[in-house]
Amino acid sequence: MSVATLIQSALGLDRPPVLRPIGEGGEHHSWWVDDHYVARLAPDREAGLRLRRELALRDLIRPYTDVPLPRSAGHGEWAPGCDFTVDTRLDGASGEDRPLSPDGTRQLAALLRALRTIPAGPLAELGVPAGEPIPWQRLAADAEAARHRLDHREPLRAPAPPAVPPVLVHADLKGEHLLVRPDGTLAGVLDWTDALVADPALDVAGLAISVGARAAALIAAGAGHTPETVAAGVFLARCETLIRLDERLRDESDSPLPLLRAQSSRAWE
Image 1: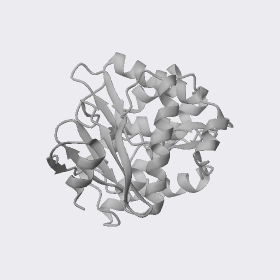
Image 2: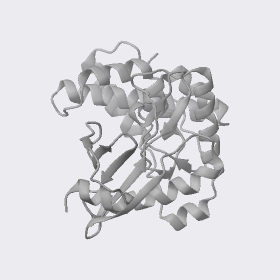
Image 3: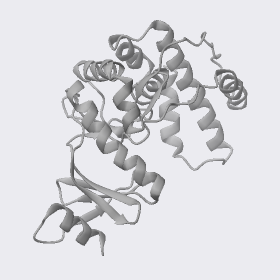
């Protein structure tokens, strides 16, 4: 069965939809479906499990926040154990291409505040995994070595890692997962397949990389996170951007160099 026929059947359409491949992201095979939907096909059983969990997790989160999340208009299996979903398409540009307004940053703060309040019981029932402890010492050592190779002059200042209870985190708040309207407000947050119950510094770091350290600090403070968590998240972002940029310049990754430089600039502002 072709992808178009599969989606036609899932949505109950009277004709096969027009599909266009989506370039960003590689874990799922993804297409724009006409002008109204996004289709994702999990390539294996593990990705299929994560995709099914994402659908349930979005429904769990939805009552806690006003930030739009995609809804599944149809889902099933395209091969044994390999799931697919056809989600409603949210209008907005990637956060890499369009800045947030003050109202947009307040929306993100409210979302992070909401994630802190979701009880552990339902998350465990959905099988949301617990994140590993952040290896602060190893990360700092790797980042310091990268800093010297890059001749990055601003020193790393490692804060004392805060002892905070784990919360639900998106864990991949990169710019392409933030959809922004022309007025700078948040049109949606995409791709919850990497969500964890983990250190909230992970999401602070993601925001520092995607919207800048200053905005991330304001968002995290507005969400009720402590100054220690904010400092840890910004430090994590700076370590990660140094390491990724260094790997790319040594041809150990194929990530787009302009994107890595932009992310580093935001984390170090």
